[in-house]
Amino acid sequence: MRILDEDVFYYLTYLILFQDLIKGGDLSLILGNILTITIESHRLTVDVKDLSLLKEFFNIFQFSKESEKFKKFKSLFDKIDDLKYFLNNLSKIADLFVKYKKTFILKYRGRDVLIIGYEVRGGLFFKNIKIVNKIMLIKMINELKS
Image (tube, rainbow, N blue to C red; front, side, top):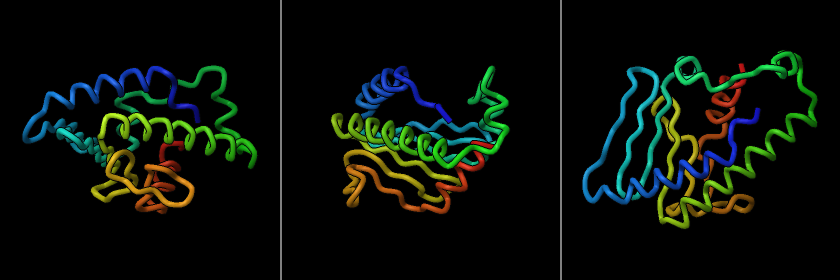
């Protein structure tokens, strides 16, 4: 599950710079019952309401040669590799948000799932990352993979 690439960090930097233009209030982008993005001066909140519709809308996964690989049962080592890749990129994104003193909140169906960035005091293993609801995060990842 390789979603993130180097372009993501490039676009996130511009999003963070755009955030600096907001001095008061917030900007909300609502895509029906799919997604709500709320941008405040120091906080970015994404509330995903329906991942299946979001996948269709943005066509997140564009498998070509690897489509058969993802249909088959993945080995434990592949899953661990995917998790390491995800956490590594999440750590880089958290560092970017901390650098600009911003916070990112991911919600799934209205409930906080993940908070990264400046306002977060991470646990023992994750610096600037707080997994608020592990079960919802797992459900979200499983729904993304299906």
